[in-house]
Length: 198
Image (cartoon, rainbow, N blue to C red):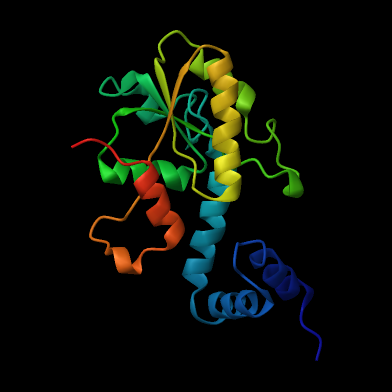
C-alpha cells in the first residue's frame, strides 16, 4: 500500500527538526493525525504566525516581534557590558542564572569552516558595530567550551581587541557541588590554570 503524498510530505517536513529521524518523524505524524488534531492545528498555526511575525532584534540579534526586543529596551540593563552568546538558549540560561545584568549579542551559531559557517554567517559585522557604539566598555565572551566555541571566542576576541575594546571570557572550572574524583581531567586542569586569589 502506498502512503499518501501529503502524509509523506508531513513526515519529511518533521525530519527537519534536530534529532528527528525517519521513524520518529513517522510516529509524530501518525500521533498528530490519529490522536491530536487540535495539537496539529495549533502547531501549524503557531509555526505560520512565528514565520510571519518573528524577526531579529536590531541590537542583540535575538528573536523578537519588534524592531528592538524588550531586553534591549530595558532601562535596568547595564549598556556598558555586552555578553556574546552563540544561541538564544544560551541567553536564556544566562538570564536564569541571575548573574549578569548587561546587554547581549546572539551570534546564532559559531564558526565552523567545515560546515560552511564563517564570520558572515554569525553576523560578526553587526557585533562589531554594536561593540563600537560608544556605550559598550567590556565585551564578555560566553561561547560554549567546544572546539568551535573556543575558536569563535578566540576569533572574536582578537577582532575586538584589535579595535581597542576590553574583551573578557567566562571562566571554566568545576561544577558547583562537583567532586574532584568525578570530574574529567581537562576540566580539572582548566580549573587549576584559572585559579584565583581568595
